[in-house]
Image (tube, rainbow, N blue to C red; front, side, top):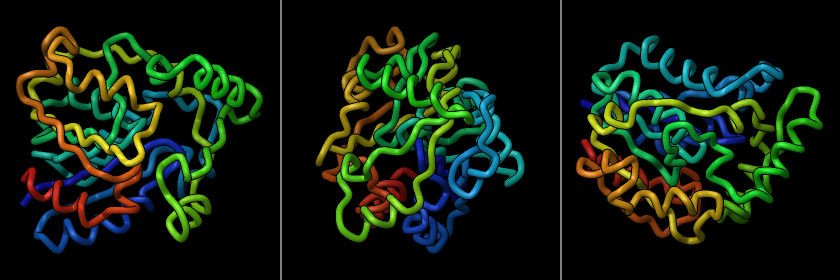
Amino acid sequence: MANFLLVHGAWHGAWCWQRVLPGLIQAGHRAHAVTLTGVGERAHLLRPDIDLETHIQDVMAAMDAEEMDDVVLVVHSYAGMLGTAVAARRPQRLQHLVYLDAVLPKPGESWSSTHASATRNARIAAAHADPLNAFPAPDPSVFGLSDVDHAWVQRRQTPHPGGPYTQVLDFDPLQVARVPRTFINCTEPPLGTIDISRLRMRDPKFWEGAWLPGSQVIEMKTGHDPMVNDPDGLLKLLLALT
């Protein structure tokens, strides 16, 4: 039995894992999905001072509350920042770290550092213009979603706190390297804001060599939200890691 902890990306919530959680449980594993402060069903907690540390603590608090060790930590998109931080602080608690089309930061970078200047400037401006310091969700078509899936995600997305976007993450990559890692690269269509991370995941010099060995790259022919539009394919990959 494995302990799966699933962490959503920006604008999402634990709701996005609804099509994956039952399969993990039916396979005999424990599985829990986190909702970060200020989004999803916790959108009523949105406030100007939410930052990266708030969300890191959300993930670690879920591990503690669920009494999880040997955790398979699955982090989607923005949550790559959080998974990296947790792995650096608690490598002994993790069995595997799965970056699901997620951000791969270097020490001293912010999430915004991995984006093109036009994207970065637009999101910072939108957050500054909002009294709760948040920026709105994009149209789900950018995630490769259409029809029913598009409508479902569009209804449930919420603005994302702006504080975590620009806060720098300091961590020890050698601690992260203690944890086996998998990067799931979603290729059809690829999301442009993950492009830098896609390059890094195959670079043997990433984190000055700490990324390799102990990691692998798997490709999925889906858009950025495979938990929505290819849950069976994602479930199969996750089960194969245990």
